[in-house]
Every structure is written in C-alpha cells, then in structure tokens.
Amino acid sequence: MALPLPSLAPPRPTGKSSSRAAFAYPCRVIDRYALPELRELFGERRRLELWLRIELLAVEALNREGVVPDEDWERIRAAATQVDPDRAREIERESQHDVLAFLRSVTERLGPEGRWLHHGLTSSDVLDTATAVVLRDASRVVEDELERLGQVTRHLALSHRSTPMVGRSHAIHAEPITFGFKAAGWYAELQRDAERLTRAREGISVGKVSGAVGTHANVSVAVERHVCESLGLRPDPAATQVVSRDRHAEIVTALAILGGTLERITTEVRHLQRTEVGEAFEPFGAGQQGSSAMPHKRNPVLAERVAGLARLLRADALVALENMPLWHERDISHSSAERFLFERAFGVAAYATRTTATILDGLEVDSDRMAANLEHSDGMVYSEALLLAMVARGADRQEAYRLVQGAARRSWSGDSSFRDEVRRDEGIARWLGAADVERAMDLEHHLAGIADTYRALGLEEAPE
Image: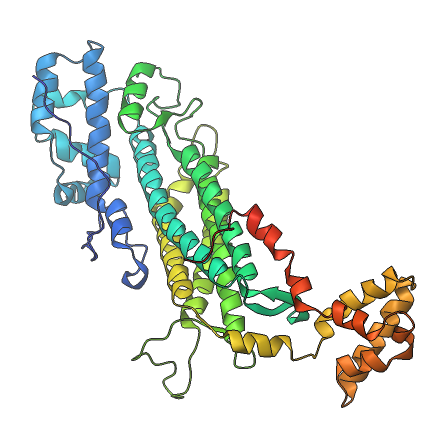
C-alpha cells in the first residue's frame, strides 16, 4: 500500500509574521527586520517536519532494500504523519537532546515498528541534511530580493545615463561622470553578488546519511542517495559525522560580501544626501519624522540601517569561518553558534537587500543640484584634460602639471575663476590656444567613454 510522505514545499509568504515556540532554537531576528517567509523556513514546526521527512525517507529506502518489512513500513507511514512540537519540547527538557526528544515524540505514538526510525543514522545525518534544505531555500529568498534590487538598480542606471554629476575621489571633486554611470557600477557588483550566492547555494545543497563517522558502516549509500535525491540534494561525497563547514562558511561569507555591496550603495546615498551636497535623497513619507527635536530634519535612516546590518553580516562570516576546524570527525563547538547564525545571517541579508531596493526605487535625484556641484570648481574637473592636451603639443609632463596646478592654486586662494586663470596663464598659452582650452574642458568628451561600460554590462537599452 503506497501512502504519501509528508510534503515539504517551501512556505509561501503570508504577509504577516507567525508565532514561534521556544523549542530548541530561540528567536534570532526581531520582528522589525523579519521577513515572514524566512520566519517560516527557520520555524520550529517546519524543522521538525523536515526531520520527520528525512527519517521516513530513510525507512522507505530500508524497506526497498528488504531490511524493513512491508507491514512495518506501512504502519509507520500511516501513523507518523504529524509532528508534536509541544511533546518534543517537553521531552527535551528532560533529555537535553533535541533529536532524541523529537524521535521519542514520534516513536511513542508507534508500536514495535517504531524501532526502524533512525536505524543506522546519527543525529547529524538528520540535522545537517535538514540544514541543507533550509539554507538552500533561504538562499532563494535572498536571491529573489537581490534580483529585484538588480532590476531597480538597472532602471536607475538607464534613467540617469545622461545625468551629469561630479565624480569624487577622497570625497574631493575629481572628474565628470553621470549618475547613471555610478548606478551601473552598483549594478555590476550586484550581478557578481548574485553569481556568488548561486555558487554557494549549489555548494550547500548536499546532505549526508552516512552514519556516525561518515563511513556508511551501518547505513548504505543507497539509503543516503534516496534521502538526498528526494529532497533535491546531492550526497556529500566525503562527509565525516558532519558535512564539512567550509560549505556553510562559503554561503555566509557570500552574504557578508553582499552586505558590503549594500553598504557601499547606501553609504553613497548617505553622502549624496548631506546638506552640503544635496544631490540624492532616500524616500521620506508624508507623515515621517526625522528628529524628535528638530522638525526640519530629513535623515537617511534607511541607508544608515543597512550600514548597521552589514556589520552583523561581517560578524556572522567570522563565526562561520571559525566553525570550520572541528576536532577529528566532529565536535559540537559549531552547533550552539549555528542555532543563532543561519537564521540571523539570512534574515539580515534578505531584509537589508529589500531595504536597499526600497531606497533606490524611491530615490529622489536632484539633477539640477548635480549640475551645479559639477560647476562649483569652475572647470577644475578638467585639469587632467588640460595637462594631456599640453603634453600632446610637446610640453614636458611635469612642467605642464606645474602650470595647471598653479592655475588651480591661484583660483583656490583668490577671487578669479579657474577658467580665467587658465586663459591668462602665459605658460599654458605657449601650448594651448583658446579653442584648445575649450575642447579640453568639453563635458561631452569626458562622458563619451561611458557608453563602453554600458555595452559591457548589457545596458544599451533605452530607459523604460
């Protein structure tokens, strides 16, 4: 008689947080930053249902091998269809072992056939295989958020491809760029983040059902293969008692690198929103208040929030790296840390990615202020072009540098503009006429090369 195994399709977003019990793991993500779909993935009931699914798949494989009699398998499948978190929690208080508590909560509802559950398995067979499913599914949640952020950033790059602004290095005016070019750089980095996360998801999508030290001494390769393939995983080809933690470190580190990208983007927004700059502003609701004391304040609170969350992701990466060197075939020094680590890292990464998309999607860009700031130094942003034009005419590079720098210095300390200083400098005039100076200080010339970046990124399309 064929009875269906419990389904474990990833939960769908519900639009609201679900309640959580305290069994085994405490809550790691506060409500303010929690995504409902991740709350479900890391929730207590789903975890126990997944453990039950693994145990039943193993018994099913043993039945196919002739180890478990058909009648025992049918009784197990018929009776072991639900988990009881309350009973498991009660037993854990006595046993101080979460997997044993779970097993007892299931087998006490069975007869003698319950002896086949966990036959030849060790706790890590269940724990690590279940963790792989959860991390794989959680990765897809982050990837979905990252895809949306990429689309928003792409639109920003296309929409502002021709919006000129000053490029800055060391926070000082450098040379002209466009705001779209800046966004295109963010877009390129986000694409690399997506690639890293996909690779890491593939790396973590492995299970192990190979026994106490990974040698398949008491459970066959066929059982492992059946469990893993049924869950959409690959068997780890060289597990010990656990799946090696380099896989987990890779995916948490990928999240930390993503956090670095998010912080890079939002830090730029924070700088552009400064009163003295005023070029771009994160969204600010009609009823939003920026300060309890100063009614005029419009603070970049979302961008600052992302910056703080990125610090958590870097800290989580360190924990994941320190979980790699376990003693011999396994100790549990990683276990306590991982009870906090994974839900927090994925929850923070997903929330920070979603928040960054919200910022960029509602970003208010002041193109007039960008143009005004570009002209603030009255042409100093073209100093390199003037230098190169003189060199092309035969001037010594160091002498040409000294002449252009001298014009800039006089402009800094006097009342005349940089353009005027260049025009009346006799040393510069030996090499460049008025038309040469104008060509060197042509904005369109400086922005023409941006097209190469757009082509390289596949951003040739017109704005939507």
